[in-house]
Length: 293
Image (cartoon, rainbow, N blue to C red):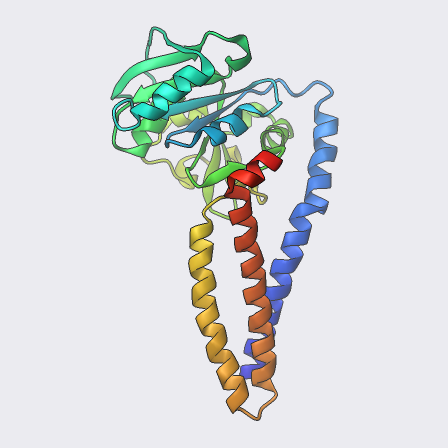
């Protein structure tokens, strides 16, 4: 039984290491090949990224740095709770308040302002002053003013990896567009991209799940376009794993069996991989790393 457990842990460690290498090498090459083929005339797909949570200015700068042409960022800001952020966005991107005309297709409430930039280079940024408490309501407000047919909401702890928008658009371009209502992330069992018409049919973001549309209109992808910045959660796992590692090491010292030292070695390897992940996420979130990028 102990030997079987050791084999399972070994396979898990090898799987993590293999997936880390797989995602950074082979998958990236495949996406680049697909992008090269799709750019010969099929990249007329528009994508609106919906940001329902207040972010720091660096995150907005990174989103607006995406080079894909048919792309926009719809940011929702609470004009009372995040008044300083709204003022900073207005100053940085030369935003002015314009007339707001809700489409009536989605349940929207709490909107007190609608802003666009006077500068052409910032035309891809749209800011909505929505003071609704529920995140679903803020996403509905963002989706209601989005210019494109495909909508990708992102969470506070997520950052787009390099080429993420091109990856998503490439996957959409590989299928007949009228047949894709949801692009789902299999590794997280969540909806990654919604087609606007499908989202309207289910009543908005109030109760959207993977099963809200038929299977033939759903496409699954395995590679996430996001880089999580929630390194605090990984740090907690690192501490818990460290305590477990000490217990395993203590058992290895007190035991004469060869199985415990092997288990300790495998646990140490897994803890080391977790530590590297923590360091990577923390470095990615630091201001110094951002400037280097």
